[in-house]
Image 1 (cartoon, rainbow, N blue to C red):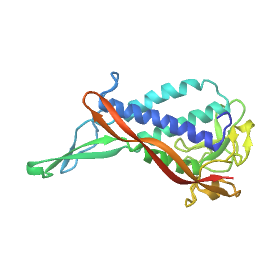
Image 2: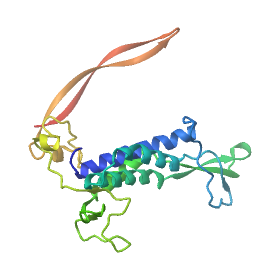
Image 3: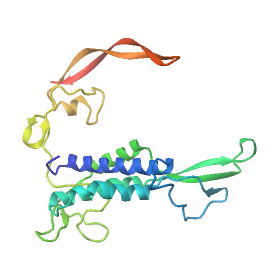
Image 4: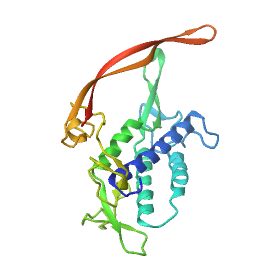
Amino acid sequence: MNAGFRETAFIYAITTAAVTHSVARACSEGSISTCSCADRNKGPSGDDWEWGGCSDNAVYGHRFARKFVDSGERGKDSRNLMNIHNNEAGRRMVEHNTIKQCKCHGMSGSCELKTCWKQTPQFRDVANKLVEKYNDAMQVRPRNSNSGQLETVSNHVNVRGRNSPASQELIYLERSPDFCTPDASVGSAGTRGRYCNKTSTGYDGCDSMCCGRGYNVSLKESVEWCNCTFHWCCFVKCRKCHTEEWVNQCK
């Protein structure tokens, strides 16, 4: 977290997105006294539907997350600018991807008219989109010593003809190490002993995570509570279940 790696950018973005998402949902659920449903959408309704219901307040969630999360970024050095940019990218990923949800009304369950509202996407969908941004993240550097701005290291030019990163993109300052071996200077514990998925071709796959060292297969035994039942009144009684699972760990 102390270095400006691509992974650092993702952590800041997804953390801020989580705050935005949680607050937006909490507003519409009535869990926060300082906010409520989002303002009714100003766009036109359709022939068979109209705006109504209680929309998640993504605007308030964005504003709250900016005030709460960005408060620790008081400096104007490159790392602070990087963090603030990635925080904003995470907030926008939630606010700009709200979806329309509808409920049918009519006799005998017919759908003569629908009432619709805006809802924040499932957080897993937000996370998946941020993973895509992580894969396409841009390396940046200070524009000059006094500007308080960052520019892309490559000659990438945005739609305005400038080599400044777009607000929805993730940015980083330093190229990441491979993280295969322990390196305390960059906060890497290495991947030896990490559990991996031998059938996956992604980052969790053994081929990627074990860095070509191979992996060990072993039978893992564990004990967990199971078959829990509630008894009146008032306690819960559970059994202990023994489970066995084949696991893969990097050499």
